[in-house]
Image (cartoon, rainbow, N blue to C red; front, side, top):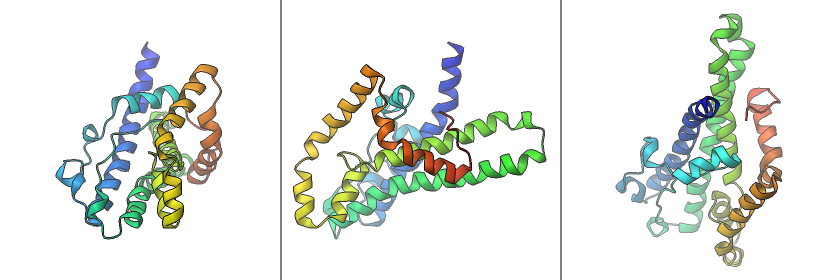
Length: 218
């Protein structure tokens, strides 16, 4: 029981930090492109409680994949709705990669430089927390880049495709949530790492590039 509580206290704050940065970035870019919906609904904030989705957060602990409460966006307020939605969608994963990179640089300094200045026991927990911050941000970015509705990757892809191709692709959007649910249920029922097969390689590569470490913390 104490181990579970410790894991929640250790992993919970990095999760809240990552999803807050992710959703705030969506709303910030949407606001800059002319859609004030997120700001007017109180979602253009760094308060994690405004973006918290209880089930999505629990999924991080269960399957290492989760989500936040989506920031409301009204494409009708954009001058070029399809292209502007691409930038709004891209903002979330990019913001997480930036955070992962920054904390990865900090981790490199602590491991390869800072540890020589202070006794190792003073850095142990701090290093563990930063490792988790890096990996959670990377996982959130890579997972959301999958081109399945309602993930960001779907809107990114439809923004890159031609109008005709995007329309054809959008016809399959309604099946997206069921596909994601099926992947989760199959993974839980069979203990077969379906999600990790989809995102594992890019996650491991990015974690190594950001931190210089090969072993993932979770």
